[in-house]
Image (tube, rainbow, N blue to C red; front, side, top):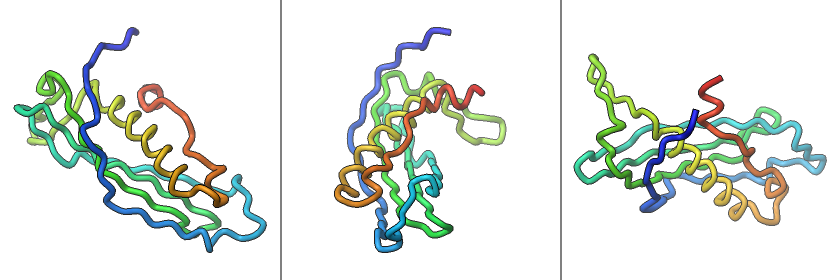
Length: 139
């Protein structure tokens, strides 16, 4: 199935939280023991201004301890945003079609942020994996 053309862009990216504890990485650090977790939430939506904010976070765990936690707010402008927003019967908001693309963009940006913030440490050699959120959701 061909992807729908959607015009969107990042307006800004704001740090909410960044915690890194390289001292918890032992001398025998093995990247195979890293566990990653991701979280995201819709924080703001303005259909008239065509603005949407998504908080995106990642957590690195090593041997049961949190090594890194990074959360950023990604502010996007999306042409025809109201076209992708659906209000369910229980008044919850569902963002259709565009959310995987916004999350992919957040993931790619977060990868760069973490690489820059961990430069010169063992985690710099453990970037976030490359995957397509859209394909992952369809499986």
